Amino acid sequence: MAEIINLRQARKARERAARDRDAAENRAAFGRSKPAKTRAETREALDAARHEGHRLERPDPAE
Image (cartoon, rainbow, N blue to C red; front, side, top):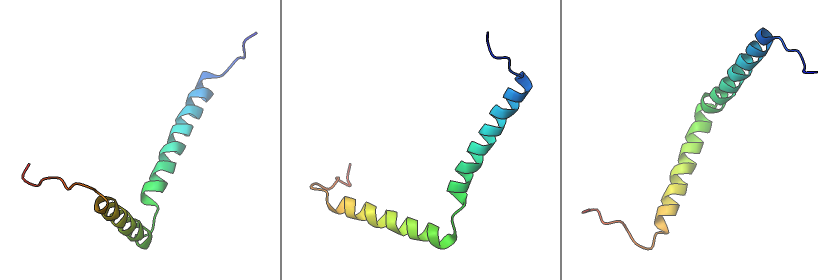
């Protein structure tokens, strides 16, 4: 036979899981200290500059 489930408990478990997932995303996005954010932004800017520096052809600014 099929397993009997309580729909109320299933709904609450699903909502709890969604809240936990949203909280984890927020912790990742907003949970860093200011020095850590600054360090990451600096590293990303440096990586972008290095990447652009290795281009063979520059994009035409007139276009």
